[in-house]
Amino acid sequence: MITSVNNTIAGGKIVIGVADLAVSADPDAVLITYALGSCIGVTLYDPIMRVAGMLHFMLPSPKAKGSDPEIKPAMFATTGIPLLFKMAYDLGAKKENLIVCAAGGAEILADNGYFKVGSRNRTMLRKIFWKNNILLSADDTGGAISRTMTMSIADGGITIRNKGVESVLWSN
Image 1 (cartoon, helix red, strand yellow):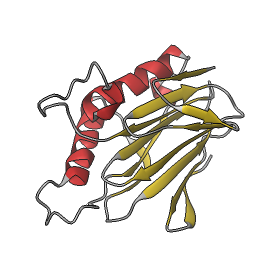
Image 2 (spheres, helix red, strand yellow; image 1 turned 120 degrees about the vertical axis):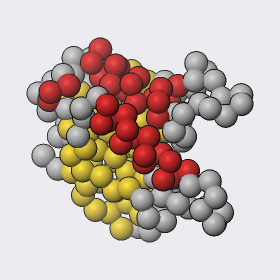
Image 3 (cartoon, rainbow, N blue to C red; image 1 turned 90 degrees about the vertical axis):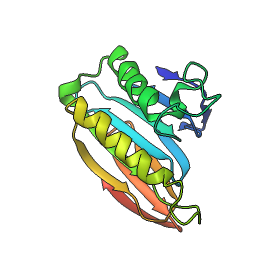
Image 4 (cartoon, helix red, strand yellow; image 1 turned 90 degrees about the horizontal axis):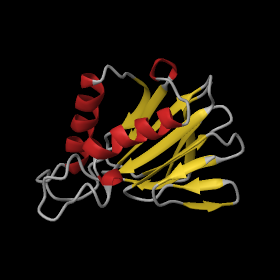
């Protein structure tokens, strides 16, 4: 079973686009998101229930004019993260079992640090997790590189790829 907001499914890969998320209990599926620059990818995995989810959020919160979290809840950390967890719980995941990881939050734009979107995203992610007593099992955040994040639902394994080099972020 796959529950999603707006992703595409191709050859067993569930592609999570920008401002999108998906949760699944299909052990044959793989979740993948591309171009995590200042955006952050958040994954969760319940190894008992074999439920996995991935979110690709763009901004910390919908404070900007015209930003409606009702229209694109996965666009923002403040609405996307709770939705990701709720959707996983709806598929049977339990908070006490969850392995949570994150990647992205880089400072990609040459704006002399004016906007600091990556930094603001990382701060909001940690604030939400701290308030909800959630610990990151692994993360690859910050820096100045774009990343691709892939997660196998069969075992919860997560890999990060940048500049053609793939590394393991978390493995069971």
